Image (cartoon, one colour):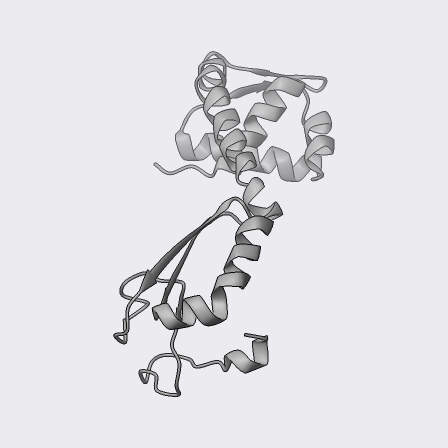
Length: 164
């Protein structure tokens, strides 16, 4: 059974807060919407997770066990996803370029050196050859060639327009 992680996060928050109203305020949703989410979660898994009174909410025995089991996992997932934010701030990873040696040496070398200084978390992987390489099949990010011939599926952009 595949559960929605947001439903499980909502369950954790309600169990920790001991109140649908408090948890709904933290999530920015209505109390009735949150109650519905938890009720449908309980129906899907076939187990009552929370004891509800007019004043408070507390986990059932099954709810306690689920809370103990999933809370560290959900927190771990959230931390891993948070680490991805670093990829939003500055470019990082590998930039694979395929070109002829002449183009790299005469047109791109200074620009690539400057790029490498400005973006130290980007690894430049440069492959030189003179053949028309299928850059998609060979997983290159860019292919640079002199002349006007390109395969029918490729897009040609004049480097003169881009200051090369």
